[in-house]
Image 1: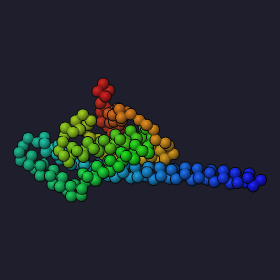
Image 2: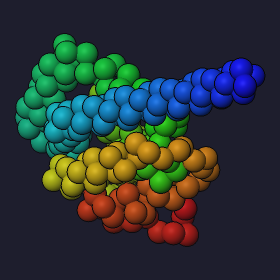
Image 3: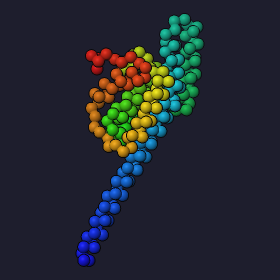
Image 4: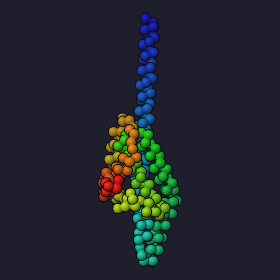
Length: 200
């Protein structure tokens, strides 16, 4: 009888440990997805600033009149200096890298691909504006970057997916799937023309 009771007690202890371990893992995942959401919103909150910096430089490089070119050049470098003062370039990349790491570790395949396309958008925009490399995004965003209202809708879409993701397990994926999604479905959601499928 005592042996039976001991075995039952041991079994209950093991079950309790398993349940506790599962709860801890779920809690960690919830916390990481909350961080993913915060990073997603944080990047979105600076989109208008990054986009304006990019447009100022684009305008400066396309003006032929020397007087207007100087005007736009002054505007661009003044705005660029303001962004540098608050360390926007480095801070943006820190968020991009962190978001990529968390997405790869904790999100399911579909949402992971969406987040990686999202961070790729910010990487292209940041490089184009800060390092004055308009050619940097030629292949990916040749027709331009999305309007903020379209990006806002996409972020709303991500928010609803984060809620569903809490109880899901991350899936493996192929990097080519990220490229295919980014060049077609992601672009269409942002109001951009999808790239020709033959070029994917």
